[in-house]
Image 1: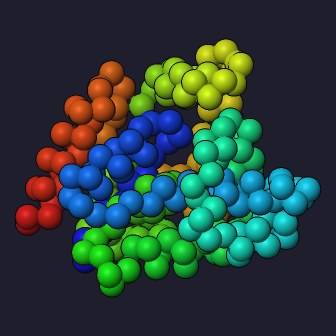
Image 2: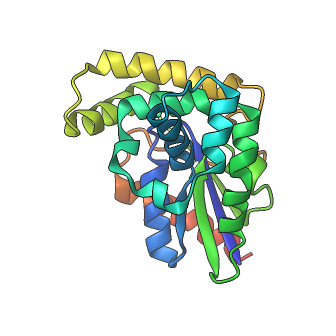
Length: 211
């Protein structure tokens, strides 16, 4: 069983990297951020409050794999709501087992998970830990292109402000704050293309896994 944990800042490219590594190694992939997005969507659909731990926890306990395929989870409003619902310790506890069971699935030879606390909380014993980031300006441009592609209307400056707010919330929350694991390999994707980032990550993974 091989587990690769990918953590990093919002819109840094960790999801694209996770999918690329999954294809390269033939491992299943889980975007754990979708768990929080799906939780937030359930809360909003029920007319609840994403700042309520009770509402968030009830929604988190009801999450199934089918919830993760809804394309609306990539939208800006759902992303913002997910950042708010993810600060609740009880929500994170409710989703912990889902992530651990994915990583330890005996039917697979390994798994790749990306998120904010994979290498520090969910899979602290992962075989390889990567921490992906990029400059705020570059991440804002990437996210802006993604959101406008979905038809949302906003400026790069709007996205940058939201991104900085989210970075602050993610890194300062009391439970499972965003931070690199002490043994994580850092990858800065600023100015790099998808193929370049994937090549860097594969070289790191290969070096670690063949030790």
